Length: 380
Ligand code: FES
Ligand SMILES: [Fe+2]
Image (cartoon, rainbow, N blue to C red):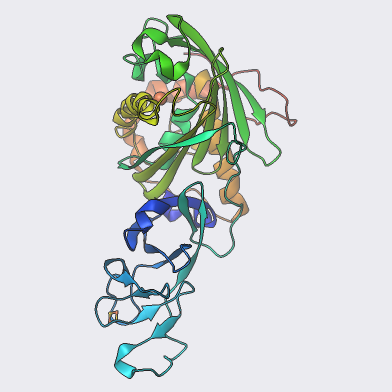
């Protein structure tokens, strides 16, 4: 699937830029291939519009914000408010500009320290709610804001993939000598998505123990990972000693093979217990390991299961549920998956035989709260 070719994904909210960055002036961003500009108005509220002046198409992001909150084009000084309306044209003095002088503005809101944007005026859902936000027992630690050369969906499926830990994270908390993963249990949520519950072994000798709050060499953490379609997940990790480390990961789509990682964490400890720097350092190692492999994966993620472009194993089930949810979204929006035709070059005759024996189709659990017990495909 090529995300920029699927219009339905324009109907979701994405975190775009930390509010702190807007204090430095207008910021450019490319969201699903569209060049946009964000700025903070005179009340500090985030605003977003197309990054093109309607006069001679200069980039507004190299302009500035006036004291009344309008963004000013640096070429001839036309000024636009947060609705996109041109409020003044210096060349006509104090006269009111023609109301048809307008640029396209986008829905834009502040939440969790970020400016969020929806490219459509008709969002399918709101910005996800996280119960830790606003809970006095939790603090929020900002972790990463950086561009990765990988498809947003690759990061999403990786977040639910128990099998990669032993390999990709062998130098941090995984153990390559224990490659058989504990498969998580999957539960459907009322909004049509799902979450996964699992228990992971953590090699505590390779990490700063203050970050996990555990003294033993090996500890087990339980995790609930929720999927918020299309590109957000929250992984709430519970350590035996009571520490909660809840990571929100957003893979904001820039282009088909490029995404902006926006990640923060909620923890029920204090800066005195573990400085934010140490918290970030732990997750830094893990994300570098993930990034290395995810940037190597084909960004054209096949989501139509009937195409069978990939060969899966049991631990891929959450990723297949993600694909099903996205396929449903496409269908509801009257779209078909758009993809390149290069998969055929990966094929071997044995692949085709393998698929004949696969158990399908992949089905969501029938009832809310009912665990999905059986693997979708044969084990390999
Ligand atoms: S191009 Fe923007 S004012 Fe002329
Ligand atoms: Fe990982």
